[in-house]
Length: 494
Image (tube, rainbow, N blue to C red; front, top):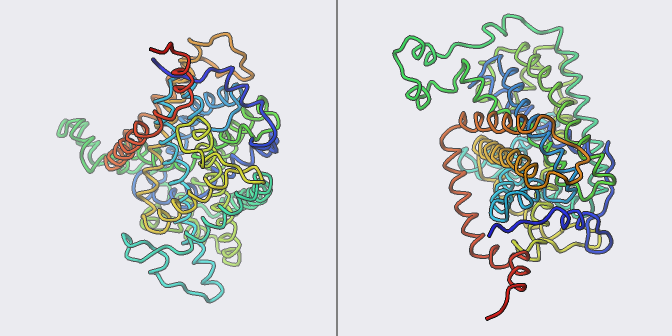
Protein backbone atom coordinates (compact mmCIF):
# COMPACT_ATOMS: atom_id res chain seq x y z
CA UNK A 1 0.00 0.00 0.00
CA UNK A 2 1.20 3.54 -0.84
CA UNK A 3 0.93 5.60 2.36
CA UNK A 4 0.08 9.25 1.62
CA UNK A 5 -1.07 12.24 3.66
CA UNK A 6 -4.45 13.44 2.42
CA UNK A 7 -4.77 17.02 1.20
CA UNK A 8 -7.63 17.78 3.69
CA UNK A 9 -5.40 16.56 6.54
CA UNK A 10 -2.57 18.84 5.44
CA UNK A 11 -4.90 21.82 5.10
CA UNK A 12 -6.26 21.13 8.60
CA UNK A 13 -2.70 21.07 9.95
CA UNK A 14 -2.03 24.40 8.27
CA UNK A 15 -5.06 25.93 10.01
CA UNK A 16 -3.87 24.93 13.49
CA UNK A 17 -2.74 27.69 15.82
CA UNK A 18 -1.74 28.24 19.42
CA UNK A 19 0.76 26.46 21.62
CA UNK A 20 2.88 23.84 19.87
CA UNK A 21 2.47 25.42 16.42
CA UNK A 22 4.60 27.81 14.37
CA UNK A 23 3.73 31.50 14.61
CA UNK A 24 2.32 33.31 11.52
CA UNK A 25 4.32 36.53 11.14
CA UNK A 26 5.44 36.76 7.48
CA UNK A 27 3.75 39.09 4.95
CA UNK A 28 3.98 38.82 1.13
CA UNK A 29 6.79 41.39 1.04
CA UNK A 30 8.51 39.55 3.85
CA UNK A 31 8.31 36.32 1.83
CA UNK A 32 9.81 38.01 -1.26
CA UNK A 33 12.60 39.36 0.94
CA UNK A 34 13.04 35.87 2.40
CA UNK A 35 13.45 34.48 -1.12
CA UNK A 36 15.84 37.20 -2.26
CA UNK A 37 17.71 36.75 1.01
CA UNK A 38 18.21 33.07 0.29
CA UNK A 39 19.09 33.48 -3.38
CA UNK A 40 21.63 36.30 -3.68
CA UNK A 41 24.84 35.19 -2.02
CA UNK A 42 27.75 32.81 -2.52
CA UNK A 43 26.44 31.57 -5.85
CA UNK A 44 26.62 35.06 -7.33
CA UNK A 45 29.64 36.45 -5.51
CA UNK A 46 31.91 33.37 -5.79
CA UNK A 47 30.62 30.70 -8.16
CA UNK A 48 30.12 33.14 -11.05
CA UNK A 49 33.87 33.51 -11.30
CA UNK A 50 34.47 29.76 -11.07
CA UNK A 51 31.89 28.98 -13.76
CA UNK A 52 33.31 31.67 -16.06
CA UNK A 53 36.92 30.58 -15.65
CA UNK A 54 36.40 26.81 -15.85
CA UNK A 55 33.21 26.26 -17.84
CA UNK A 56 31.48 28.97 -19.85
CA UNK A 57 33.73 32.03 -20.16
CA UNK A 58 31.72 35.24 -20.77
CA UNK A 59 28.79 32.98 -21.75
CA UNK A 60 28.26 32.37 -18.03
CA UNK A 61 25.49 34.92 -18.62
CA UNK A 62 23.76 32.27 -20.76
CA UNK A 63 24.41 29.70 -18.02
CA UNK A 64 22.42 31.90 -15.65
CA UNK A 65 19.57 32.09 -18.16
CA UNK A 66 19.50 28.27 -18.57
CA UNK A 67 19.50 27.80 -14.80
CA UNK A 68 16.76 30.42 -14.43
CA UNK A 69 14.55 28.64 -16.97
CA UNK A 70 14.82 25.39 -15.01
CA UNK A 71 14.05 27.25 -11.80
CA UNK A 72 11.09 29.05 -13.41
CA UNK A 73 9.40 25.78 -14.42
CA UNK A 74 10.02 24.28 -10.98
CA UNK A 75 9.02 27.55 -9.29
CA UNK A 76 5.59 27.55 -10.94
CA UNK A 77 5.06 24.02 -9.62
CA UNK A 78 6.24 25.04 -6.15
CA UNK A 79 3.85 28.02 -6.19
CA UNK A 80 0.80 25.80 -6.80
CA UNK A 81 1.78 23.42 -4.02
CA UNK A 82 2.66 26.16 -1.53
CA UNK A 83 -0.62 28.04 -2.03
CA UNK A 84 -2.68 24.85 -1.89
CA UNK A 85 -0.81 23.18 0.98
CA UNK A 86 0.58 26.01 3.15
CA UNK A 87 2.41 23.73 5.58
CA UNK A 88 6.05 23.83 6.65
CA UNK A 89 8.16 21.20 4.93
CA UNK A 90 8.41 22.33 1.31
CA UNK A 91 8.94 19.56 -1.26
CA UNK A 92 8.87 16.94 1.49
CA UNK A 93 5.25 17.76 2.33
CA UNK A 94 4.22 17.95 -1.32
CA UNK A 95 5.73 14.54 -2.06
CA UNK A 96 3.98 13.02 0.96
CA UNK A 97 0.64 14.11 -0.51
CA UNK A 98 1.32 12.94 -4.05
CA UNK A 99 4.01 10.26 -4.26
CA UNK A 100 3.78 8.61 -0.85
CA UNK A 101 5.76 8.35 2.36
CA UNK A 102 8.91 6.68 1.05
CA UNK A 103 9.46 9.26 -1.70
CA UNK A 104 8.67 12.00 0.84
CA UNK A 105 11.40 10.64 3.12
CA UNK A 106 13.86 10.53 0.23
CA UNK A 107 13.19 14.15 -0.68
CA UNK A 108 13.26 15.27 2.97
CA UNK A 109 16.62 13.60 3.37
CA UNK A 110 17.72 15.12 0.08
CA UNK A 111 16.81 18.61 1.32
CA UNK A 112 19.54 18.26 3.94
CA UNK A 113 21.94 18.51 1.00
CA UNK A 114 20.25 21.69 -0.17
CA UNK A 115 19.76 23.61 3.06
CA UNK A 116 22.28 22.30 5.59
CA UNK A 117 25.18 21.79 3.19
CA UNK A 118 24.13 24.93 1.32
CA UNK A 119 24.58 26.92 4.52
CA UNK A 120 27.97 25.25 5.03
CA UNK A 121 29.02 26.17 1.49
CA UNK A 122 28.12 29.81 1.99
CA UNK A 123 29.83 29.89 5.39
CA UNK A 124 33.07 28.67 3.79
CA UNK A 125 32.97 31.50 1.24
CA UNK A 126 31.87 34.01 3.88
CA UNK A 127 35.06 33.43 5.84
CA UNK A 128 37.26 34.41 2.86
CA UNK A 129 35.56 37.79 2.46
CA UNK A 130 35.55 38.23 6.24
CA UNK A 131 39.32 37.79 6.25
CA UNK A 132 39.56 40.48 3.54
CA UNK A 133 37.64 42.82 5.84
CA UNK A 134 39.95 42.05 8.76
CA UNK A 135 42.97 42.87 6.59
CA UNK A 136 41.58 46.39 6.11
CA UNK A 137 41.94 46.86 9.87
CA UNK A 138 45.38 45.29 10.02
CA UNK A 139 44.21 41.92 11.38
CA UNK A 140 45.64 38.88 9.62
CA UNK A 141 44.26 35.48 10.55
CA UNK A 142 46.56 32.51 9.88
CA UNK A 143 45.69 30.62 6.68
CA UNK A 144 45.48 27.45 8.76
CA UNK A 145 42.41 28.90 10.53
CA UNK A 146 40.69 29.89 7.26
CA UNK A 147 40.76 26.52 5.50
CA UNK A 148 39.99 22.90 6.32
CA UNK A 149 42.57 20.08 6.17
CA UNK A 150 41.74 19.24 2.52
CA UNK A 151 42.72 22.78 1.55
CA UNK A 152 46.02 22.87 3.41
CA UNK A 153 44.72 24.31 6.67
CA UNK A 154 43.42 23.02 10.00
CA UNK A 155 39.90 24.40 10.41
CA UNK A 156 37.81 27.29 9.05
CA UNK A 157 37.12 29.13 12.31
CA UNK A 158 35.12 32.15 10.96
CA UNK A 159 32.77 29.77 9.10
CA UNK A 160 32.02 27.89 12.31
CA UNK A 161 31.45 31.07 14.32
CA UNK A 162 28.96 32.61 11.84
CA UNK A 163 26.91 29.38 11.64
CA UNK A 164 26.66 29.27 15.44
CA UNK A 165 25.63 32.93 15.73
CA UNK A 166 22.88 32.62 13.12
CA UNK A 167 21.58 29.41 14.66
CA UNK A 168 21.25 31.21 18.00
CA UNK A 169 19.33 34.03 16.28
CA UNK A 170 16.91 31.52 14.73
CA UNK A 171 16.27 30.02 18.16
CA UNK A 172 15.14 33.48 19.29
CA UNK A 173 12.28 33.59 16.76
CA UNK A 174 11.22 33.81 13.10
CA UNK A 175 9.96 37.41 13.41
CA UNK A 176 13.27 38.64 14.79
CA UNK A 177 15.18 36.64 12.16
CA UNK A 178 12.95 38.11 9.42
CA UNK A 179 13.70 41.69 10.55
CA UNK A 180 17.44 41.01 10.43
CA UNK A 181 17.06 39.31 7.04
CA UNK A 182 15.12 42.27 5.57
CA UNK A 183 17.91 44.65 6.56
CA UNK A 184 20.56 42.36 5.05
CA UNK A 185 18.55 42.00 1.82
CA UNK A 186 18.36 45.78 1.34
CA UNK A 187 22.12 46.09 1.78
CA UNK A 188 23.11 43.31 -0.60
CA UNK A 189 20.65 44.27 -3.35
CA UNK A 190 22.07 47.79 -3.10
CA UNK A 191 25.62 46.51 -3.63
CA UNK A 192 24.57 44.45 -6.66
CA UNK A 193 22.93 47.53 -8.20
CA UNK A 194 25.98 49.69 -7.41
CA UNK A 195 28.29 47.09 -8.98
CA UNK A 196 26.18 47.02 -12.15
CA UNK A 197 25.74 50.81 -12.35
CA UNK A 198 29.37 51.74 -11.69
CA UNK A 199 30.88 48.85 -13.60
CA UNK A 200 28.85 49.22 -16.80
CA UNK A 201 30.84 52.16 -18.16
CA UNK A 202 34.13 50.32 -17.52
CA UNK A 203 33.25 47.21 -19.57
CA UNK A 204 35.97 46.28 -22.03
CA UNK A 205 34.30 44.66 -25.08
CA UNK A 206 37.47 42.64 -25.74
CA UNK A 207 36.83 40.71 -22.51
CA UNK A 208 33.63 39.35 -24.10
CA UNK A 209 35.46 37.96 -27.14
CA UNK A 210 34.95 35.17 -27.83
CA UNK A 211 31.67 35.21 -25.97
CA UNK A 212 31.51 31.41 -26.11
CA UNK A 213 35.10 30.07 -25.96
CA UNK A 214 35.69 27.08 -28.23
CA UNK A 215 35.55 23.53 -26.90
CA UNK A 216 38.11 21.36 -28.69
CA UNK A 217 36.12 18.22 -27.97
CA UNK A 218 33.00 19.61 -29.64
CA UNK A 219 35.06 20.34 -32.74
CA UNK A 220 36.31 16.74 -32.76
CA UNK A 221 32.71 15.46 -32.49
CA UNK A 222 31.64 17.60 -35.46
CA UNK A 223 34.52 16.28 -37.57
CA UNK A 224 33.72 12.66 -36.62
CA UNK A 225 37.04 12.12 -34.82
CA UNK A 226 35.32 11.66 -31.45
CA UNK A 227 32.03 9.95 -30.65
CA UNK A 228 29.38 11.81 -28.60
CA UNK A 229 29.45 9.38 -25.66
CA UNK A 230 33.24 9.39 -25.64
CA UNK A 231 33.08 13.20 -25.59
CA UNK A 232 30.52 13.13 -22.75
CA UNK A 233 32.88 11.01 -20.65
CA UNK A 234 36.03 12.92 -21.61
CA UNK A 235 37.75 15.88 -19.96
CA UNK A 236 36.61 18.05 -22.88
CA UNK A 237 32.99 17.99 -21.71
CA UNK A 238 32.00 21.02 -19.67
CA UNK A 239 35.07 23.08 -20.49
CA UNK A 240 33.68 25.87 -22.70
CA UNK A 241 31.50 25.57 -25.78
CA UNK A 242 27.84 24.50 -25.47
CA UNK A 243 28.68 21.78 -22.93
CA UNK A 244 30.49 24.42 -20.88
CA UNK A 245 27.38 26.59 -20.81
CA UNK A 246 25.35 23.61 -19.56
CA UNK A 247 27.88 22.65 -16.90
CA UNK A 248 28.15 26.32 -15.99
CA UNK A 249 24.37 26.31 -15.54
CA UNK A 250 24.72 23.36 -13.17
CA UNK A 251 27.40 25.23 -11.22
CA UNK A 252 25.68 28.64 -11.02
CA UNK A 253 22.38 26.88 -10.33
CA UNK A 254 23.57 27.09 -6.75
CA UNK A 255 23.03 30.84 -7.09
CA UNK A 256 19.27 30.26 -7.52
CA UNK A 257 18.89 27.89 -4.60
CA UNK A 258 16.72 29.60 -2.08
CA UNK A 259 13.46 30.56 -3.80
CA UNK A 260 12.06 27.20 -2.72
CA UNK A 261 13.09 28.02 0.86
CA UNK A 262 10.12 30.40 0.83
CA UNK A 263 7.83 27.37 0.75
CA UNK A 264 9.38 25.98 3.95
CA UNK A 265 7.99 29.03 5.78
CA UNK A 266 4.43 28.55 4.48
CA UNK A 267 3.09 27.76 7.94
CA UNK A 268 4.51 31.07 9.20
CA UNK A 269 2.93 33.21 6.45
CA UNK A 270 -0.02 35.45 7.36
CA UNK A 271 -1.82 34.84 4.04
CA UNK A 272 -0.09 31.85 2.40
CA UNK A 273 -2.64 31.42 -0.44
CA UNK A 274 -1.70 34.86 -1.77
CA UNK A 275 1.78 35.32 -0.32
CA UNK A 276 3.46 32.06 -1.33
CA UNK A 277 3.15 32.45 -5.14
CA UNK A 278 4.22 36.11 -4.83
CA UNK A 279 7.17 35.18 -2.64
CA UNK A 280 8.39 32.32 -4.83
CA UNK A 281 7.91 33.79 -8.31
CA UNK A 282 8.66 37.39 -7.30
CA UNK A 283 12.00 36.59 -5.71
CA UNK A 284 12.99 34.41 -8.67
CA UNK A 285 12.19 37.16 -11.23
CA UNK A 286 14.06 39.85 -9.30
CA UNK A 287 17.17 37.73 -8.88
CA UNK A 288 17.26 36.46 -12.48
CA UNK A 289 17.36 40.02 -13.84
CA UNK A 290 20.10 41.01 -11.38
CA UNK A 291 22.16 37.88 -12.13
CA UNK A 292 22.21 38.36 -15.90
CA UNK A 293 23.26 42.00 -15.62
CA UNK A 294 25.78 41.26 -12.86
CA UNK A 295 27.55 38.42 -14.72
CA UNK A 296 27.67 40.45 -17.94
CA UNK A 297 29.35 43.38 -16.17
CA UNK A 298 31.70 41.14 -14.19
CA UNK A 299 33.08 39.32 -17.25
CA UNK A 300 33.30 42.64 -19.07
CA UNK A 301 35.42 44.27 -16.37
CA UNK A 302 38.01 41.49 -16.22
CA UNK A 303 39.00 38.66 -18.56
CA UNK A 304 37.33 35.43 -17.43
CA UNK A 305 40.68 33.61 -17.24
CA UNK A 306 41.72 35.84 -14.32
CA UNK A 307 38.96 34.35 -12.13
CA UNK A 308 40.56 30.88 -12.03
CA UNK A 309 41.16 29.91 -8.40
CA UNK A 310 39.93 33.32 -7.19
CA UNK A 311 37.80 33.06 -4.03
CA UNK A 312 36.73 36.72 -4.33
CA UNK A 313 36.17 37.39 -8.05
CA UNK A 314 33.80 40.31 -7.44
CA UNK A 315 36.54 42.28 -5.69
CA UNK A 316 38.96 41.39 -8.51
CA UNK A 317 36.54 42.64 -11.18
CA UNK A 318 35.47 45.76 -9.27
CA UNK A 319 39.13 46.80 -8.90
CA UNK A 320 39.09 47.58 -12.63
CA UNK A 321 36.69 50.48 -12.04
CA UNK A 322 39.20 52.46 -10.01
CA UNK A 323 36.68 53.04 -7.24
CA UNK A 324 39.08 51.61 -4.67
CA UNK A 325 37.53 53.67 -1.89
CA UNK A 326 34.39 51.54 -2.25
CA UNK A 327 36.19 48.21 -1.89
CA UNK A 328 35.63 47.96 1.86
CA UNK A 329 31.95 48.86 1.52
CA UNK A 330 31.65 46.24 -1.22
CA UNK A 331 33.16 43.56 1.02
CA UNK A 332 30.84 44.48 3.89
CA UNK A 333 27.81 44.32 1.61
CA UNK A 334 28.87 40.93 0.24
CA UNK A 335 29.23 39.64 3.79
CA UNK A 336 25.68 40.77 4.56
CA UNK A 337 24.49 38.94 1.45
CA UNK A 338 26.16 35.72 2.53
CA UNK A 339 24.76 36.11 6.04
CA UNK A 340 21.14 36.36 4.88
CA UNK A 341 21.56 33.26 2.69
CA UNK A 342 22.80 31.21 5.63
CA UNK A 343 20.01 32.53 7.80
CA UNK A 344 17.29 31.41 5.38
CA UNK A 345 18.89 28.04 4.66
CA UNK A 346 19.26 27.21 8.33
CA UNK A 347 15.61 28.26 8.80
CA UNK A 348 14.49 26.06 5.92
CA UNK A 349 16.30 22.95 7.13
CA UNK A 350 14.93 23.21 10.66
CA UNK A 351 11.37 23.52 9.29
CA UNK A 352 11.74 20.44 7.08
CA UNK A 353 12.94 18.30 9.99
CA UNK A 354 10.23 19.82 12.22
CA UNK A 355 7.58 18.57 9.80
CA UNK A 356 9.19 15.14 9.37
CA UNK A 357 9.30 14.77 13.13
CA UNK A 358 5.61 15.72 13.44
CA UNK A 359 4.90 12.84 11.03
CA UNK A 360 6.86 10.42 13.21
CA UNK A 361 9.62 9.80 10.67
CA UNK A 362 12.17 11.46 12.93
CA UNK A 363 12.43 11.51 16.75
CA UNK A 364 10.15 13.89 18.65
CA UNK A 365 13.02 16.14 19.73
CA UNK A 366 13.13 17.61 16.19
CA UNK A 367 9.62 19.07 16.64
CA UNK A 368 9.94 20.29 20.24
CA UNK A 369 9.28 24.05 20.33
CA UNK A 370 10.75 26.61 22.69
CA UNK A 371 8.84 29.43 24.40
CA UNK A 372 9.60 31.47 21.27
CA UNK A 373 7.74 28.86 19.18
CA UNK A 374 10.86 27.76 17.31
CA UNK A 375 12.22 24.19 16.93
CA UNK A 376 15.27 25.01 19.01
CA UNK A 377 16.61 21.48 19.42
CA UNK A 378 16.70 21.09 15.64
CA UNK A 379 18.55 24.42 15.41
CA UNK A 380 21.12 23.19 17.94
CA UNK A 381 21.67 19.88 16.14
CA UNK A 382 22.13 21.55 12.77
CA UNK A 383 24.33 24.20 14.30
CA UNK A 384 26.86 21.45 15.09
CA UNK A 385 26.26 19.50 11.86
CA UNK A 386 26.63 22.49 9.55
CA UNK A 387 29.57 23.85 11.55
CA UNK A 388 31.54 20.64 11.02
CA UNK A 389 31.05 20.74 7.24
CA UNK A 390 31.71 24.48 7.05
CA UNK A 391 34.89 24.14 9.07
CA UNK A 392 36.44 21.15 7.35
CA UNK A 393 35.02 20.40 3.84
CA UNK A 394 36.18 22.28 0.66
CA UNK A 395 33.63 24.75 -0.73
CA UNK A 396 33.71 23.36 -4.30
CA UNK A 397 32.77 19.84 -3.16
CA UNK A 398 29.94 21.21 -1.02
CA UNK A 399 28.59 23.36 -3.88
CA UNK A 400 28.25 20.46 -6.31
CA UNK A 401 26.52 18.28 -3.69
CA UNK A 402 24.05 21.06 -2.96
CA UNK A 403 23.26 21.65 -6.64
CA UNK A 404 22.58 18.01 -7.53
CA UNK A 405 20.49 17.48 -4.40
CA UNK A 406 18.34 20.52 -5.14
CA UNK A 407 17.86 19.63 -8.80
CA UNK A 408 16.66 16.18 -7.71
CA UNK A 409 14.12 17.80 -5.36
CA UNK A 410 12.88 20.05 -8.18
CA UNK A 411 12.33 17.04 -10.44
CA UNK A 412 10.17 15.34 -7.81
CA UNK A 413 8.10 18.50 -7.26
CA UNK A 414 7.42 18.74 -11.02
CA UNK A 415 6.35 15.08 -11.06
CA UNK A 416 4.15 15.70 -8.02
CA UNK A 417 2.14 18.43 -9.78
CA UNK A 418 1.28 16.08 -12.65
CA UNK A 419 0.29 13.30 -10.24
CA UNK A 420 -1.91 15.61 -8.15
CA UNK A 421 -3.71 16.96 -11.22
CA UNK A 422 -4.75 13.34 -11.95
CA UNK A 423 -5.52 12.15 -8.42
CA UNK A 424 -7.12 15.36 -7.04
CA UNK A 425 -8.40 17.34 -10.04
CA UNK A 426 -11.19 19.12 -8.15
CA UNK A 427 -9.32 20.36 -5.09
CA UNK A 428 -9.20 24.14 -4.61
CA UNK A 429 -6.04 25.67 -6.09
CA UNK A 430 -5.50 29.37 -5.19
CA UNK A 431 -2.68 29.35 -7.76
CA UNK A 432 -2.53 27.01 -10.76
CA UNK A 433 0.65 26.06 -12.61
CA UNK A 434 -0.02 27.02 -16.26
CA UNK A 435 0.18 24.60 -19.20
CA UNK A 436 0.26 21.34 -17.23
CA UNK A 437 1.81 18.91 -18.15
CA UNK A 438 4.04 20.96 -20.48
CA UNK A 439 5.58 23.18 -17.76
CA UNK A 440 6.35 20.31 -15.31
CA UNK A 441 7.82 18.16 -18.11
CA UNK A 442 10.04 21.02 -19.29
CA UNK A 443 11.11 21.55 -15.68
CA UNK A 444 12.09 17.90 -15.42
CA UNK A 445 14.01 17.97 -18.72
CA UNK A 446 16.02 21.11 -17.89
CA UNK A 447 16.80 20.00 -14.33
CA UNK A 448 17.89 16.51 -15.43
CA UNK A 449 20.07 18.07 -18.14
CA UNK A 450 21.81 20.22 -15.52
CA UNK A 451 22.23 17.19 -13.24
CA UNK A 452 23.78 15.23 -16.12
CA UNK A 453 26.28 18.03 -16.73
CA UNK A 454 27.68 17.89 -13.19
CA UNK A 455 30.83 15.83 -12.43
CA UNK A 456 30.42 12.09 -11.83
CA UNK A 457 31.70 12.56 -8.26
CA UNK A 458 28.52 14.53 -7.50
CA UNK A 459 26.39 11.55 -8.56
CA UNK A 460 28.48 9.17 -6.47
CA UNK A 461 28.12 11.32 -3.36
CA UNK A 462 24.38 11.68 -3.97
CA UNK A 463 24.06 7.89 -4.20
CA UNK A 464 25.98 7.36 -0.95
CA UNK A 465 23.88 9.99 0.83
CA UNK A 466 20.64 8.44 -0.40
CA UNK A 467 21.67 4.92 0.63
CA UNK A 468 22.38 6.22 4.13
CA UNK A 469 18.95 7.90 4.19
CA UNK A 470 17.17 4.72 3.08
CA UNK A 471 18.86 2.75 5.87
CA UNK A 472 17.67 5.30 8.46
CA UNK A 473 14.14 5.22 7.04
CA UNK A 474 13.76 1.46 7.36
CA UNK A 475 15.56 1.39 10.73
CA UNK A 476 13.48 4.18 12.32
CA UNK A 477 11.12 6.20 10.13
CA UNK A 478 8.97 3.39 8.76
CA UNK A 479 8.47 1.84 12.19
CA UNK A 480 7.44 5.13 13.83
CA UNK A 481 5.37 6.62 11.00
CA UNK A 482 2.13 8.07 12.38
CA UNK A 483 0.21 7.30 9.19
CA UNK A 484 1.33 3.67 9.27
CA UNK A 485 0.52 3.40 12.99
CA UNK A 486 -2.96 4.87 12.45
CA UNK A 487 -3.58 2.50 9.52
CA UNK A 488 -2.45 -0.53 11.55
CA UNK A 489 -4.77 0.39 14.43
CA UNK A 490 -7.77 0.26 12.07
CA UNK A 491 -6.99 -3.23 10.78
CA UNK A 492 -8.96 -6.14 12.28
CA UNK A 493 -6.98 -8.02 14.89
CA UNK A 494 -6.27 -11.71 14.69
